[in-house]
Image 1 (cartoon, rainbow, N blue to C red):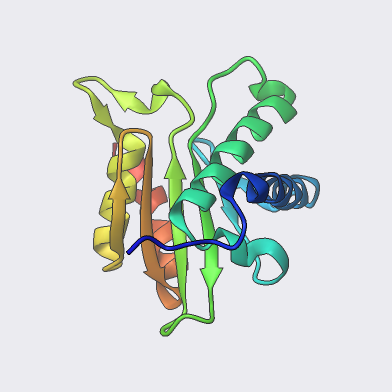
Image 2 (tube, rainbow, N blue to C red):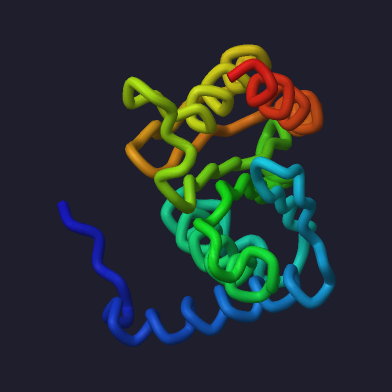
Length: 165
């Protein structure tokens, strides 16, 4: 049986776009991102519209929006390829509490010789090291679910793995 929504998808899209821009604007204006040289990282804080980004596709769209905005908004990066972005959305109401984490590449410069994706490899190794559930590992993005207690450790593993690549 196909699920039926009270309103058509086309009428909900403007609201989602507005929410994406609103949350993205808050992250950028509040400088709620970190630059780790090889990539940017964002951890969304619980509350408000953040609950709308607990699905992989919604969080991926926000990550792509932020990666472009960071590239365009930082003068030194404006003409450079986008850096990868790691974004985490809390799901504290889940049992056990967790974070949905999405990585987007941002550009082809993450690809090493021999067709290896260095950032994607670091993400997958960090997921393995923290026993995270990999939900998706695609060409330009990856998604995993990490226990809230392991969120910081996951991030540390990404940084360490990138140093090895």
